[in-house]
Image 1: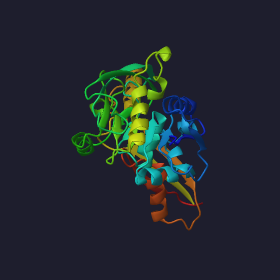
Image 2 (image 1 turned 180 degrees about the vertical axis):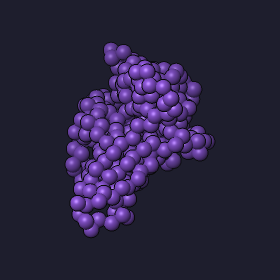
Image 3 (image 1 turned 90 degrees about the horizontal axis):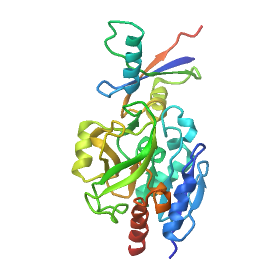
Image 4 (image 1 turned 180 degrees about the horizontal axis):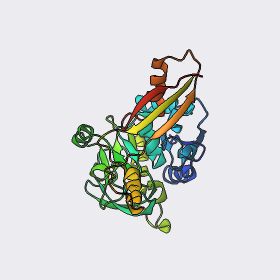
Length: 225
Length: 79
């Protein structure tokens, strides 16, 4: 059966097309595009992508307004039913602001926008999104953000570490994130938020393809299920 | 009714912007500045019937991110 994915676009999203292209290249089926003001998602979705960008101009806090938009109520309901949700960069900020993931993304500790290819370590290779990697594998993914400094209190950090919910960790000081956390999963494992951009690394011609396995894992996992 | 919402980072949450402002103040020659924290002031003009509970709800649901921020509601005297 065809892989049914949707990518949400907010005013100011700018990685929505990249995410849709990555999903189509890997799954063979075009991703559906959903506008933030829609109240409903397409039916029977296998995957929801929340893209990077600067939704609502980062007003108030990054991701704050987008996380309260009409479509996010539907995304939260879908996530609670177990539909896989990937939030990248601003999408990660939207997921923490919406309460689907714990913690918050703050201004980078060095205060500057960071835009480069960052070395990461895969910490969890058992999840729907990371099954195509080996635990401890080192990969390179692009990062491009001003507010990627992951913060959560120590109890929360201990809990998510203990539950194996840190998916990716920076291998060098990237932005001041607590415990160098680059990406985390929700408790059920069907929601992943990450600052690095896997959708920008799916073809060698684009400087690397280490992001491809993430989409392949999600597509294969669902086809097998 | 005018209301001011003061949003500030919780104690213990590192404030990179506050630290940069602190350095800049020192660069300008101001001494004796112990610490700087940058917050946000939101002014609302709301119906007089708006309750404190509703204002708190607005803060918790949108105006502040209570993972990292505290808020304080200040009702202004109406002229």
